[in-house]
Amino acid sequence: SISAFARPVTTFVAPGPHVRFTDALHGWVTGGPDLFATSNGGRTWTDTGVSGVAGAVAPAGGAVWALQYLCPATTSCAPRLIESVLPNGAWHPVAQQPSLLAGPAALLRVTASEAFITSLKPQVAGMLVRTTDGGATWQALPDPCGPGTEADPLASLDGVTVWMACAGQGGTGSQA
Image (cartoon, rainbow, N blue to C red; front, side, top):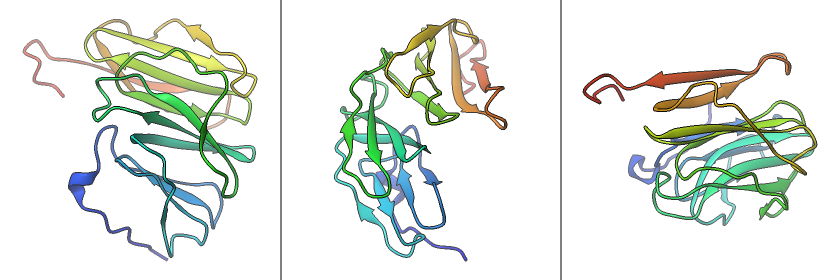
C-alpha cells in the first residue's frame, strides 16, 4: 500500500527529504527541521523532537544513525552524528564524533560496524571518513573526488564495494 506524508514543501531543506525503513513497521522521514518516525508502517508519523535539520537516516544492527545540523542551513555548519536504539529509543549524539567539514554530508551504513560519511565544503574541499567498529573510531580516507567537486550520495549493494558519485561545476558555475 502507499502511505502519504503531508508536509509543506517549504519545510524541507538541503540535504533534501529522505524516507528510510528498517522493517515493515519502523521508518523515518528527514530532510527538514523535523525528524519524523513511524512504528506502524507509515499509518501515523510522530515528531522525534530532534532539533535542527536532520539529514539522511541509516539503520543497521538494532540502531539507527542520522546526521544532525544545529544551524539553519546545512552549508554553514558541520553535521554531528546522532543515534537511536531501535525500535523507538531517544536520539542522542554518538560518543565518538567523526571530524566533518561544514556543509552537506552523506551517510552510508554498510553493516552495524562499518559506515562511511562523505563531507564537503562546496567548491573547496571534500573528505571521506570510515568506521569499522560501529563508530568507536573514525579513519580519514583520501578524497576520491578531488578538490572543487561535490560528492553525494554513497551506495553499496553488497557491503564490499562502495559507490560514490562525484560531480563538478561547469566553467561558469551554472551546473548545479
